[in-house]
Length: 190
Image 1 (spheres, helix red, strand yellow):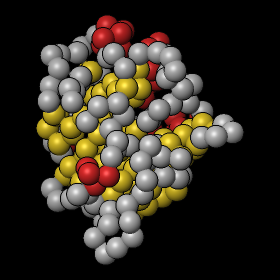
Image 2 (cartoon, rainbow, N blue to C red):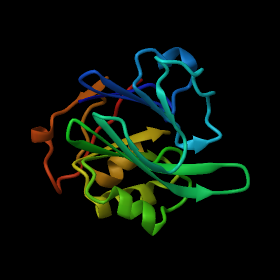
Image 3 (spheres, rainbow, N blue to C red):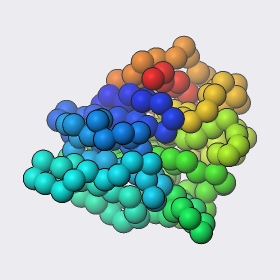
Image 4 (cartoon, rainbow, N blue to C red):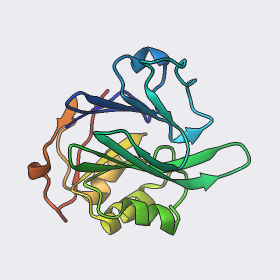
């Protein structure tokens, strides 16, 4: 599996031919995608036009079986204008937890969904998103092998959790490389 960061909350997850885009910033990045996940509704970008080669669009809670990609989402936050959904994506036998643009401590349903994930992508660095302390607490509770900070300055989360290395362009990982209960922070650059 290869994970690349495209800035803000946007990531590309690839396992073999399966490509999942998370919160893409523009439609130009849709090419070659198998699935697009929007963690907020309304999304930051319009869904792709319908067609045979259009990627599958997910922007709401539910369970989605896309063959080599499994997605399960639950509502994480709801306010008058926006719905935030947390997702668990399983590809290549690796599970990734996506918290998107979460602004407050997640509900028990979100914690249950993300229990046992291998990789957790979490907003970190404070307002308006999850505080560094809350992101670190969640990572310690869920005990993923890898935590990837998104959205703001990752340095506070790296300092809080320790065990972080130099920033990388992409994360290339196999299931056998994941070490359970040894949380490692991986900072990706865009």
